[in-house]
Length: 430
Ligand code: AMP
Ligand code: GLY
Image (cartoon, rainbow, N blue to C red; front, top):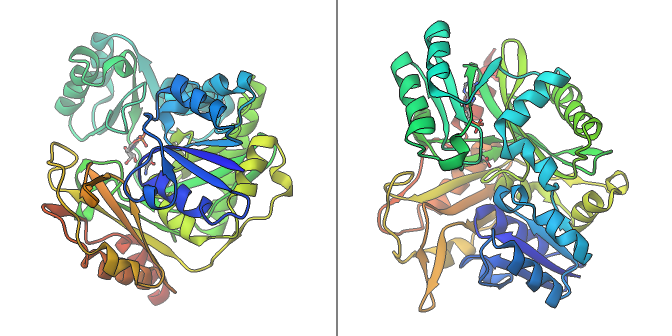
């Protein structure tokens, strides 16, 4: 089969890395890809959101399956646009992708169907939003309705910050149309985890748990990023919690989407806060997590293609999915300055050394080829990912690899996985 992966980040490298091994895949393309992806797939210079050109490419090259990595093409309707041409895409339709594309839609869906999430109100005028804030006080969370690469969620410890958040989103329009409506919701406390599932609308295949590290600095300090590292499994998600999340959140959501005439097929990603009142949904995403997929893909045994095809074709029930019990952990190496401004184009050294290490894979995110050399080309540059017999062992190995890689102004957190290691140590001692 011919497969096209859409996107060019770490998640798409993880998809390409796995698909390159599939006996079912004869030719693998990626649009636009990156320097790492170029080693395993034929990169095509088309932006991930240029749906007309992607469709032409898929038609002209008789692509059997297109896998949309990021949310933007899904929310823009890539599945719907490809369908009349008889082209298969892994992912939800535009209507179903609203679960990520509109936070107002997602919150109201949860409210209508009793899916646990923080209490909230929706506003489309800043004055009303501020009067409400004055009434409820801080801490409080202000979120823009639309897509903003995770940046338009502002957790406010003081009322002043919350007013400022409303101004940024609704008056200064820092996130464009995404801020036409906002949500103000109660602040939840607890530990976060990502629960990701494949679903064809009938069967739900839940992947092992994982945990992202969103803030830029150690100890979860500083502004949020796209994710500075991840590991799987996440010990905070016990077996009992997994069962609860599956029953009360994932199954309910897939049913709710069916009942509301928006059948859901693809990846359903629930960002969960484990609170004293049980698991609550922070957000839904309509695609795989980045960087969560990097450790997850290293734990997936066997072929990814039957899972993707089963999801698209509605036959997921017949697909067996096996996971390596060994944990995996990904350390994101970023450009200094990210998530604000940073320079690009610095050569990356040490990749050949790390390629020799066992149980280590370096997934490329923001990289490019310049005269045959791999150079930095984005905020998140690499996802150095390792497997080990324990989270500690995976962590040690991932950091050993990261230390062999050099580029100017490289920055990474030094505590990826520490929360899990501490939790495991506490449960052993007590
Ligand atoms: P989201 O994109 O909605 O997942 O939000 C990004 C991040 O903001 C989450 O990973 C949480 O760390 C934080 N967040 C979102 N909603 C809440 C909430 N209701 N209470 C506390 N933190 C939140
Ligand atoms: N790692 C967070 C996300 O993919 O949204």
